[in-house]
Figure 1 (cartoon, rainbow, N blue to C red):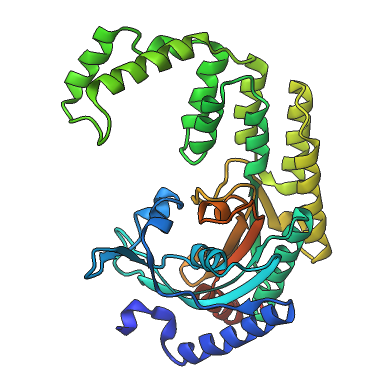
Figure 2: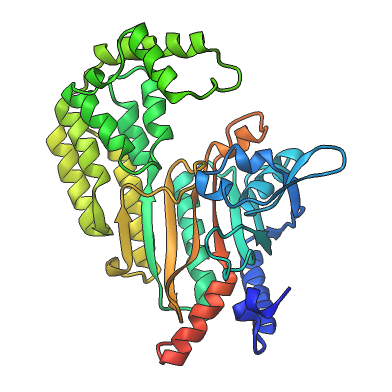
Length: 382
């Protein structure tokens, strides 16, 4: 370890981090969260198969002498959930942690490749509104207990988008495709456009000759497990299916417009309600949940001006299924994300749970919190 890899560890900062960790863990314990410490080395597959591209490309992997592919944990949420499944935990389970995680920083060699992460995971509480409120309350209390009061909040909700997609008159495969590609900028919007306006199918190859010509031009070997004939047959099926698809233009355009909404949360909510009403779409349960979260934040002293809602926001983690959030502050380098989390209701089943288990959590970048606190103190804000 070198001091340049850990810029916040200078001048007693390590001691300050330890003191801050004690404060946070005591606060978590006061809310009923028991501490866990998953192994640093984890099976690589649990991260590579379940995280977004942002985490996959930053995960350190290695092979042990027996040939198993392992990874240095790039976060603690997935290992916490895996351990709960393996231990046969009873639910609801409230789990806290504080430990090192490891992430490659491509193109930024000056950034640390390991850092401390503290947080909480709430598993198996079926009252999702209560769970959302509990995690938000703990996250804000933790930042304040660490001495940081000057921060803003960005929120989103994949459940809004997923509910819209589920209401579409589309085959299940196409609805799944839209959900899977939520994180690809512009992809969902372009797909919705041609599904609604009918010009997308004309861009797909319709004949065997066209498809073979495209494959020849690419010059690459077929993906593992798929023959050239498999690829051709699937392409022909997709072209035929696409030609028969046609969404209500009003609905397709409304979804695309909703994904463009971003701004102060109360204003964004009003825009979403107006848009859905114009398009004749009912998402009352999802909108009521969003209103409840804003009410919780207001009760915690978070002004509407501190909360930014962005519809096309998923935190670059493909395991999220609903409400997501990030806290931001400023250190000496500028704006920095200090904490984040959200709902990931499918994770436990993907890791082997025998039944669905609701889940939501929050992770705090403790070194960034310390740096932001020191910056506000220096600027006389605290």
